[in-house]
Image (tube, rainbow, N blue to C red; front, side):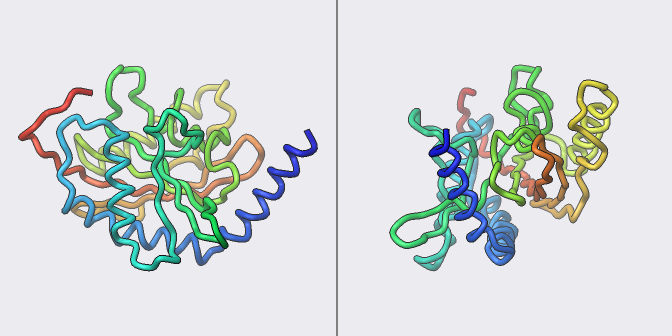
Length: 227
């Protein structure tokens, strides 16, 4: 038990050393700069699986990284041996190895069937914001990002829908972790990319600052894939 706690303490210290404002701001600036290019350059198939989109996004972002000593985007959720709870992690080289310094959760909008997954971006089993709130991912971080792949409707529609769902959660007595403070705040909505932010409380009493980037997915309908 002591050894497990020591390992976790050392991990938190290592991440705290790396998770400086400079690193976080650099990663967020990088995402904001290159996500529009991903929309323009990558043609995704209609009904393409989320893991496939995440993999392509990770590869694309790495292709935009210029410095060998800069950060790397890693997607490994398709591997059966993967122990990573996040969709994409950002890693920084320290010595001879890479340490995780940032995490990104990705969701399709709308969520694919079955219908009970409708609110998967916000709440429910495997839901994005809820996983951060319950420390199932991003446990050691104070800032993280979410990427939404908008396949139907538009940014304004989903912004209103997310905040409606959160508002409804606050009305349920059993949902003591949810409050109006969890609602998304709009930064901007552009033609291909939108940006929002939220301050979300967690089960350990801390908050996590989430930056939400939504992209309008360009769909190639010449070939269709099964879900």
